[in-house]
Amino acid sequence: MEMRAEHARAFLNAADLIVGLGSDAGIEHTSNLIGSLAVLAGIAAADAICGHALGERAAGENHSDAVALLRRGSAVGDRSAAQLKRLLDVKTTTQYSRILIGDGKAAQLLEIARSLVDGMENRLRV
Image (cartoon, rainbow, N blue to C red; front, side, top):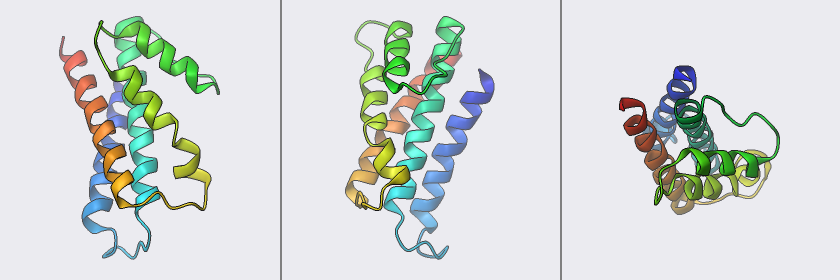
């Protein structure tokens, strides 16, 4: 699961690069790209957490399975599953829709992803 942890970090770093360089890199609308990278970072972090805690990760098309598995692998009171659900709820919009989510929403998604990746880092240290 170390590979999924590496992916989570890379997606988060890529999102941070887009935040900093977006318009200078010739990217006109960055919000959906940032949101999409946040979603991917959250999914990869959840995979790493589940792999570490349970020895498995969700691999199917049904996103609710991933949320349920993360809930099972999380400590009581942990918000990781709820955070993953929030990211997955906007996956289609950020990755496939022509609808722009806006900079504020992109920033929220990035913070959720950052929280999941931070939680992953804490779990992997144990």
